[in-house]
Length: 519
Image 1 (cartoon, one colour):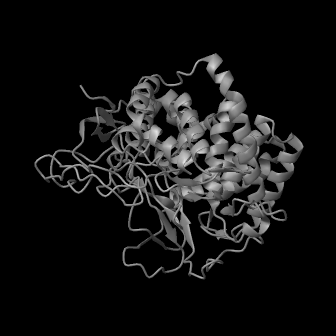
Image 2 (image 1 turned 180 degrees about the horizontal axis):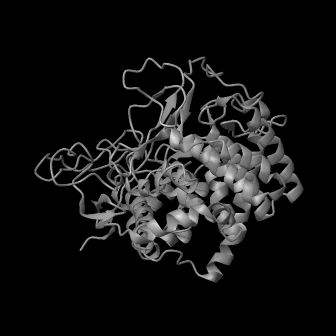
Image 3 (image 1 turned 120 degrees about the vertical axis):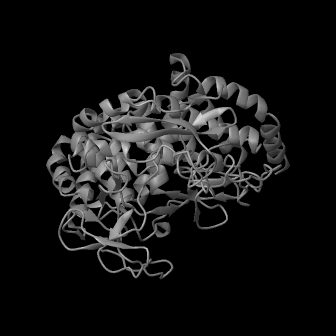
């Protein structure tokens, strides 16, 4: 115990040096050399083998549907009895990744995926849109009205982002497993993302809603409508208006399918404009300038953070920024936009964990809470939302000023029990491989944070408390990152060709973010 505490103290005291080294590393995307990358392969292959073990353990043997999570023992009795479209999509692409890495045979991958697709085809869905509900029982595929473990009621909901991740898994399967292409395509082509798209919101680009209920949710904020025809539904009161967030996968798929117009790419906010006090409830006043693309005026804004200008996510978390580029090569297609921002976002997360907060570890993203439940974690100042996601259990936040519109408060002088999640480091692999592997090695060595199924979901670094469970979403991100790293970007290749590339690459290439280093 005391040895571990001393080790953690050394991590914290050495943080400033670590940040200096990491800053130089992140400044060069993919800077890890060939020899160093080869040296890392054995470690990454072991991580992949163990992570796949947890994904396989989550899959129900009869239906092929993955549970949402499983206990650290990987025993069947510890599997949750609910799953979501995102979990199913993650299991599909994880199975392909396991095959491409060489962990399972092509035959096993086909058998697993065939079972899953047969079950997905039978799931109840909203027929006019072809979209899937948020929660099903993985044991029998039935739509859930109550959570099995708590008994809490569920109002069946059809989420745009969750259906986006399922459609992503189906598209990937369609291209990666030719023998099952027809089955995957039939399900995916029945999913109409225009049913979420409101062309009037920030026209002409428009924005997508968070989702809808097909039964009255008794929610005062709900808005009745029918964007794609058919009976009216109850939409969420909010749209997904922040650009650098994970729901953009639904936008990309809708654009590629011709269901949503191309100009929608420019219809969401990089940051809100800075020319008045209307947006002073957000994190801080952005820097930037107005530009126009395809007839859409766009405020190219970025938030200042410790010498960086970063296009923020909504809450400041890693998965908002970097889950989508597991499948879409944003930084390659948009060298003046995503190509600048993605590595800077990683650098900002490292800067916060190693220097600003002094945790000695980094990687902040929604995960299990080591104290129980599930929580959003992030770097407050890297998010648009004024409250933001915080990085510690105490919810230590930074109240920045907003120009002359709002006064700020003194910055925190200390942070509390920081919570890091290993999946955030895997998302950063492409942009800072050596730093990510060092962070993972430190987490593994300093805490009881690694089991038969790979890294447990989250660690509170001051108390040493660990959430010893595996989540399908988080393990799915890990498998996708490792599949790309160890199999020549195979997962990216399956998703990003064809209509995705034809529609999205030209728009990404024409845009220039305000991201960069402060002068």
